[in-house]
Length: 197
Length: 197
DNA sequence: GTCTATATACAGATAGAC
DNA sequence: GTCTATCTGTATATAGAC
Image 1 (spheres, each protein chain N blue to C red):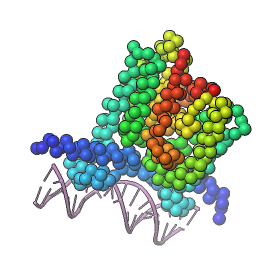
Image 2: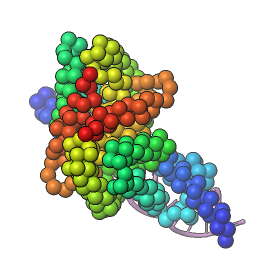
Image 3: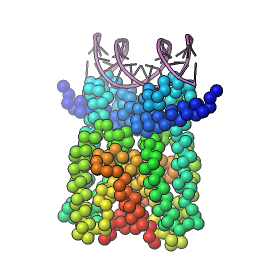
Image 4: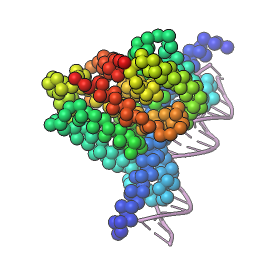
């Protein structure tokens, strides 16, 4: 029983599955495509995971741990505007470094969040409400410009994830160079102007 | 040959198909689901359209005509900030009134724009470049704050379509009330602050 | 024009040899 | 642990009666 090979194959499968699920959605993904991408046979995939659903589930579980972290990292003791800016940059970095994860998530939400509604309605919701209260307190103290905390958070999600989720569109509109070229500078200006008290 | 019934049935099919394709993506949608939703039999769908692909194609073609219109409506002779604000409100209204169309589009882009790359690389790209030049000219004249025109356009897309595309997430995080409650006020503040010269 | 019945293809999952 | 071969369900599309 070689645990090293097992771990290597599980990783190969999950990496291939992330490629395929993020590019085609759950229904559009096939075990054949994942197996080909992973360099394994289809039955071998199902030796490591019970079902297509189980592979997808494993990807989401991996993702959700890292999904909350940037929001959690906002420090109540920090300087308000700087904390929001750092959060925005953190999310933008994730969109650049983990675009497949962003698209996996987007595919799920777009289709009504069938497999994520529990997570969103409990953990994510509680965390967002907590951070919204923090931001509202900062506003009340006059340390941030008056701004709706929920919409502020949504705006950061929308603006950063857009570069991962709509990457195909941006590349077709601006074929030359990196799709995220100039994004950080633009978003820094935008939030500096929005948040200055 | 009753053209009135034909038109009515084509409309029924396309409306049902928009429901199903936007909610489940191309592969996730089934003719069974569309037929049930339309109140017709599956072979009857294929009497009006050659294939599942053809139904999808018809939806996209309908969509693309209306997709360019708000960008085109930006008036070079207008007051710069007011024109941008009007464009943003126009897009926000479309996200509210046509969320299924927004999700249909998002599904396509997310999966690499396989059926939209021609449209995006030609018509949309040309229009965006034209509008970017207009905005750049306004900036050069000092009538808008210095801002990257492309990223400004992307930001409006991201922030408005987010309310349609991520509607499921927003509803789970804020179960009470309308997901777009406060969105227009927030975005108005945001762009007022960003664009003031 | 609309239906029931069906041909055909493909995808998820399993059997069983090695 | 990994493979080939295969079972089974489901989806697109067609045939043909009415």
